[in-house]
Length: 209
Ligand code: PRP
Ligand code: URA
Image 1 (cartoon, helix red, strand yellow):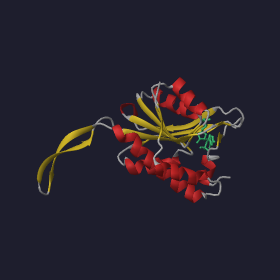
Image 2 (spheres, protein in one colour; image 1 turned 90 degrees about the vertical axis):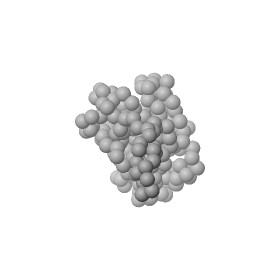
Image 3 (tube, protein in one colour; image 1 turned 60 degrees about the horizontal axis):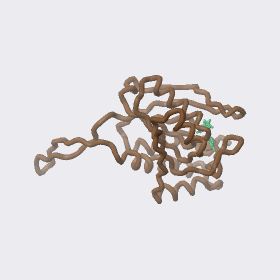
Image 4 (spheres, protein in one colour; image 1 turned 120 degrees about the vertical axis):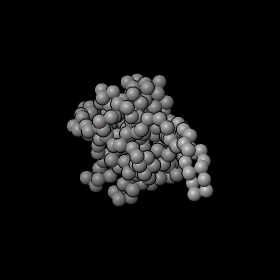
């Protein structure tokens, strides 16, 4: 079964509290979702492999470290995943971006894919799927399925708020995928929203309500 890790760094927890507040403006919400995305990336990449590299400083030759292993693709799930993207890319500027569009049917809560554009070499890359909300887990599972169909082997999922139901759904359908969250919340409400949650992350990011 994939690991589920709550990244409880004080800065992440503090920032999450700000965006949970209902009075937080779209502008501040957007800014902080990006910042948390960056802080989470810092923690998630803690175990990246390193290799020795010979370089020359102004003082002479030396052997130092640089990141080894597979290159990364960041995969935001539209729309709300876009909110995390800038912060993540600030940490890994050389990453490529693959975008996948999903919406949830408001009645059935079933996910529907409406867009997918991946880098050509995505199968050779490690993918970090990002979305602020893991509710039923349907959207993230479908996005992970779309990556696997394209041959991707190494996939991680980063969300801000996870419902226990969503974590279970990912672990059952994609047991090879590790999940990282800024918080695990109490539960999913019958309307598919997480409580206490953030509300509708897409609407809060883009001011569409
Ligand atoms: C939200 C959220 C996730 C999904 C989570 O997107 O950003 O993608 O719901 O729910 P699930 O785990 O039950 O699938 P939404 O469908 O509201 O689209 P949006 O980002 O365009 O607002
Ligand atoms: N999508 C959201 O934007 N918020 C939730 O609480 C659940 C799904």
